[in-house]
Length: 576
Image (cartoon, rainbow, N blue to C red; front, side, top):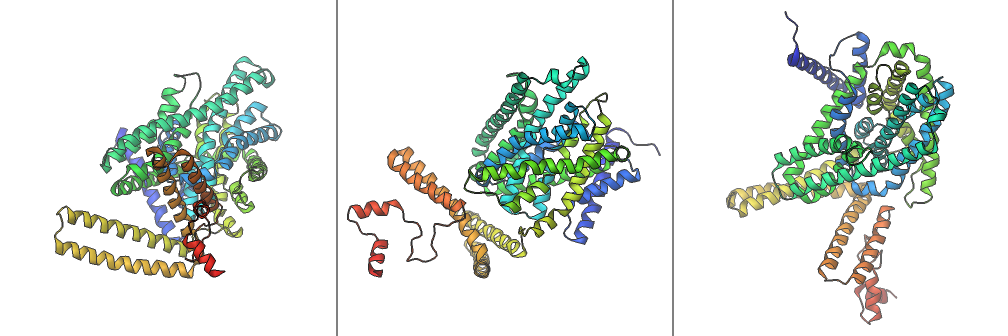
């Protein structure tokens, strides 16, 4: 039989990957709670050890240009923008200041530990230290990590890759200059170089954010005026890849000599479409179609990337440089810990919503390193100094990070008593999700009936069926909340946050139309912001007793000044 070539051979290789992935999926389903992505990596490692050939090249461009944009976009689109804003101080300081500090620490220590020139050691640190959004997003979703912890770890990983790539590119150019000119680091690293590198980081981050925002707004405007879910799926696909390529390749070096971060551009676009776009520019059908499509896309890309990382791991090189890998693993963890604990605690002093120590432990252990470092090391040219050692070390640290840290993450969280999603919470999500679906079905049936597409008798059958289910759901949810007061409190805070945001929106509309003067509107907006601050710190402003007012709005005191007695004051007077 003649060996297949061309597209047929590539399809056979791709099919082989998915056959292995299907076997892994069956294995995971049978043994219960086991991270699917880690199982894929282990299967890939087994393929590499057994010498089975998969002729799909895991390249720098394949990871950064094909795999990364959809994973970044999906991760950002499913991130709650409000939660992200609440934790932005911690995320930004860790992603920028923390990453730069960690690179310097690991680079200086690694210079002596690994025996590399200082510049090469710093380059290794810049490659390995950015935490990987691909790995973190997949693992935290499977573990059902608490929402705030997920936002902190995922948010940092989504941002620090853009910063890491800029630092890597700067150091990479310096190594090439040093090698070509035969000069040492002292001659290349000057005050001017440091200032230029700092400017590069700022411009790359800000430029990427602007590109993502502009591209996201352009697609948002089209989606706002369109109600065709299949076309809108294509638009989000264009946005995910287009914002990345526009920033990373089209505009970088064209508008200016600076590089714009494609990672940050895609993350910004995803945050915009996943939050504002989902709220204002998508119908119910479009939301279902778009988010289901991206969920499936992320699953398929994760399947490919984790299996290929395992299958393409250079086992022989890792064995040959085992001593360096064993040195690198603890040093990477120590560098991570050396910035997370002090920086987080410093930021805690300046923001009201501090990050607890238990979360900091998980942030250290959950800083996984895989696809981004591997993409960067695969981009090193064949004649690059210490290339084989760097490749072995990056793959070795990535394997430890994913297998050891990934497999023990659930146990670490349990040991720290960080509650992941319980069966009760899963049931609550199931009930609430079904309740929303039933409400949407009732509204849809009513619209069809009003439009004449459903006869009266058929409409009554629909309405009777769904209203019975709605009553049963409401009773079950009420019983569940009664038995689990912590769930009720969480529902209250989430609902209150959304209601207060609507209050704020209504006040802005009133000020814009002149219904409320600017000075009165600003005073009312300040009050809503005070309420939001309380809610964000976990304190509700809503009382569960009708006769009690937990937050007394300022209009009550103004009314009293003019001699108007409110019901609250009347109740207080009668109580006295």
